[in-house]
Amino acid sequence: MASPSTDAYTACVRRLMDLFGKLPGVGSRSAERMVFHLLKSDPQEAFALADAIRDVKEQVRHCSICFHLTETDPCSICSDAGRDRGIICVVEQPRDLMQLEATGVYKGVYHVLLGHLAPLDGIGPENLTTNALLKRISQAGTGIAVPVREVILATNPTMDGDGTAVYLQQCLAATDVTVTRLARGLPSGAQIEYSNRAILSDALIGRTKA
Image 1 (cartoon, rainbow, N blue to C red):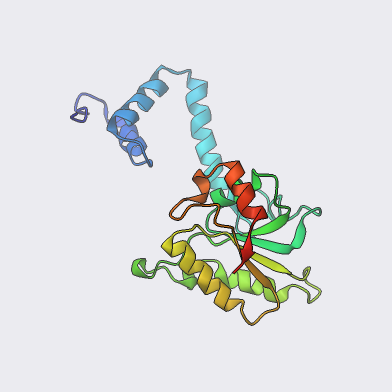
Image 2: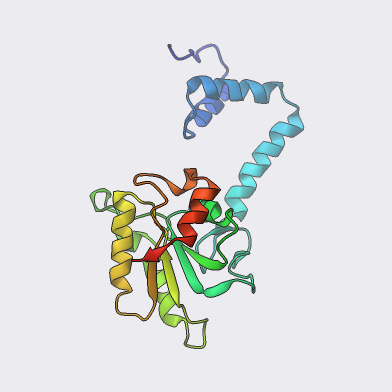
């Protein structure tokens, strides 16, 4: 089906359609429907959306400890005194953290890599938060932080995710920290963000030594 022509629309409408069309999973027709919804909606509703977008860009940042998304630093998880700081679960993205957290099973803390190793795309350890993770572990037990007993490598079970986990495992080989991986309740090639809570709970509980 041909894409709708935008020639008949005003410049500001075309601009908004183009911007919506750049969002992931949004095609030209979906962008057109979104613009018409805003045009028909109450002005306060439309302005609330604009304000929410502005607030997200201006107020949300990465936690200085774990690199999760937060409006306060440190984030609510890192500042929670009830968390077991001796266990760090390493994930690729904040959305993976939120999926694992939703299971209600895990009571340790996290570290977000903000990606995975992808040599063909020019993404190496220096492009991730790996150095911050290693520094965080090395400082633990020196009076700065609680000693780290275990690091759970919860990268996605993909080629890049597994490669990232192997790299981190090698980096931690000389330490006394126990390194574990999520149990393969997660099928190969799956993404953590699309897995349901039952699968993630089983994966956390059944994790094995790397």
